[in-house]
Image 1 (cartoon, rainbow, N blue to C red):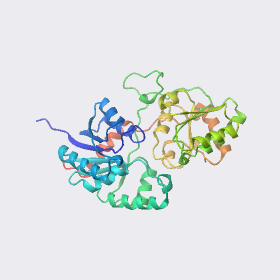
Image 2 (image 1 turned 90 degrees about the vertical axis):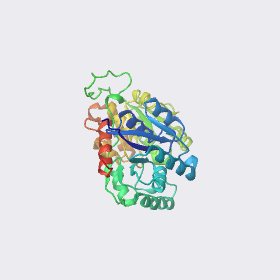
Image 3 (image 1 turned 90 degrees about the horizontal axis):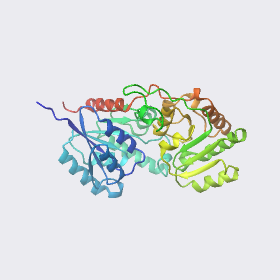
Image 4 (image 1 turned 30 degrees about the vertical axis):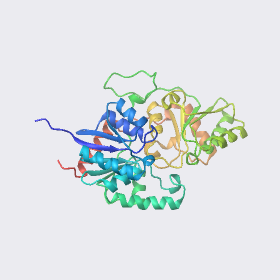
Length: 367
């Protein structure tokens, strides 16, 4: 007798390829052992890319752009037709809709974006408190909760008081697949060695140009570095509301010839052309940019916030407000490849997916 794999319905309320899309696509490529995955998304780039990797996708009127009534109807209809054993939601909107309409299947959520300080993700502390109450209420309906870092899990417990234990499953990464495009690949089945990257001071930021990324602090630190290493170069890749203010700061500090702001760039290509990735964020949960950079053998400089210390050693961590320390850490990570972090023992995508399968089992899915 052939056993049919049970269905896990992944509910993702965004159509673009930013943020959670990387996680979703990695899982779609790898698969969750013992489960047939079906993805519900709005029409758009994510649905297209999911189909390109062979995933089963349902496009529907779901997500903030479609409104709560339409989203609820869509999810209810998909659950009725697919009869999943698990509904696994991602991002706050999907979590709340799932809590409101799903009855019968086990409910699982993965938290990708909480911060200890409410104003990181909300415009005011009042909105943050309202959303915390909403999350506390919806978590009463969930059978399992996953966090992408220990810091994320701690913040969930502190703010939302989930009635079930929070399982920490970091974003997995396959070291071989994240190497620079022109790097030689090891024989199939062998672990890629840490790339031997030459020293250099080409600094890269891959971040939205917004206040929570603290890019002015990075520019100040780079200015200190440039005084002693005039060959150093900084790329501020990305777009956002602080673009004009950053250009003014670069001009004021006399760094116009050393700093470029190209807007959106391909992350893989940009990392291949730089020596150090810098991230001065107020908070990160489990940053794919940091993981990718460390997997490539790049130097990495980041603030000791959120899940960053779970990825990086102390030699990569620095207080964003200490420009002298930022400059010194950029120099060390750029010019001393032996102190760069690497990712020797980080879980692979397959490891991550196996732990998700175990979480489904622990949530009480009937055998």
